[in-house]
Image 1: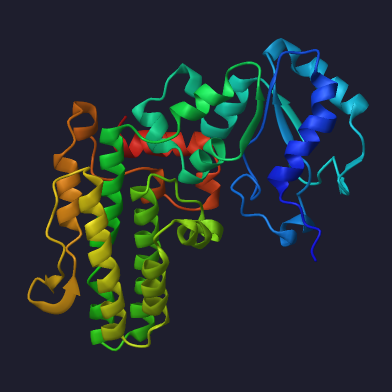
Image 2 (image 1 turned 180 degrees about the horizontal axis):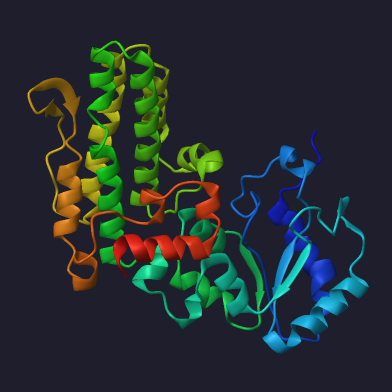
Length: 339
């Protein structure tokens, strides 16, 4: 049998047995949050081949950071649980920071000082998931739990705005698998179907009030949600299909179920969830723009109503170079949304 221990479990023991005694004399908080598949509980034995091991982020007041770093460097053992405690690459087994600096570095702002519209819309879903997942081992500073609670989910009108943005992503492409197939571009039809499957998965995750992770873990996050087995089967069938009519049939199953899920959320008025032709063309769509418009119409906050219909950074930006850099995310979001 495999001897693999999930990183969250390993790090919990690492804090209790090694790190906590080292920092016991200093008021602190400690957690496994931030980067890493183990934070989202997606790590496997494969994860251990690089940049993986026992890891804890220790939070202390700013004037204690150097003191605690020195104590950790002096007393930290070389190994724990069969893994090196000084992880190679960009991550170290024990990271020491004050809360404001750490959150600002990861997100571009400190949630303990409030979360603005710009903060919400410029922060990638992956980063929000990293900060609200994982585990707090100790919160002596009483900073981590309030910060995580502040970021647990969007305020109601911003939730509607982001959901509307995701429906618009579908509206932009829903007729294209058929149109490409009609002109003999089966490869193009297949590619757009895969793109629609991605957007549908992200929409379902958002409707379940979870932050969709980045591409590597999107399928895992989707399949872990209760009640998604039939949706997953239909999406898999759509992606594997060999003709546009078959793709349209399987996508239609998903569209109808997602429309029903929209109606159950109560975020906007319920809408009729049957398929319909795309204008006068023989392509069956859900007319996703209807759902975006209904959600936008349910927004009451004047600041949110004034925003252009673009959504959050994940819905109009792409690329790791952007989505892993909070400064770039904030600059682009401010410019695009004129915040």
